[in-house]
Length: 355
Image (tube, rainbow, N blue to C red; front, top):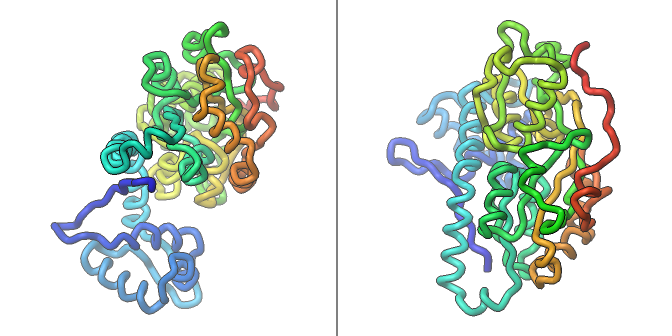
């Protein structure tokens, strides 16, 4: 049985009901308290009562208007942004703790099962793999930056390292950590990266040069992440200095955290994948197509754990996950490639540097 730890928090020593965050997410998605109640599996009367209690203790979280449905207040949007940030930062430690508990509780049973440890740049499809692998593979998954993941692979701290590269560039920070005589690449997916903007694009952002406009607030990914590397390459290609972007130094650790910052109104624009924007019903301006890849030592391809993982990648359930995520393509999913093939790809559409 897989063990998972979920981050939790308290308000003045009073526990906050686990339903709060899922309910707020559902309200943001549907714009209706009744639809949100159905989505989280509780009665309208029950969630109405809970909202009244939360509003009294925390401040107004949801505004209800007759004929206009429900909408989150800035306080609620900020809470969801912080929740996503906390999950991203705590994920590696909680994953390690869960594995420690599993070893202590199940001992030999776990030792006999095929296992695989992955350090990887954040991806919305890959984060579903632990659920798909349950009962088949003991999978450890920690999300880190692309560079940090490849460095973990070099130290022997993981079996696979997940990273991503734009299809028209050879990213030096990535390439220098791969050896064609040592590594093979496994394709996860091709996905779209671009500018995540507010619903309806209220700031009329059209291209990269717009990010330097006075008063525009940008939110970035953390240094060392593959997305940060791709974004910096886009800026360099367009001749834009990073210092010209208000908010360039503000960092988040996942695509969803960037999207949540935009959805909460704490940033006007961020850079991330289309699926994150779609999940929060935000606007998206595509800039680049990229390959998400997993590096492994060639000598490990016959390991039982890696064979199980490849079977999962090539299976229908994971293909269904990819199909559910806007901006994802399965053209390379489950393909084992050498470096030359894996890092190459068809040239994408012209980068929108200016309108």
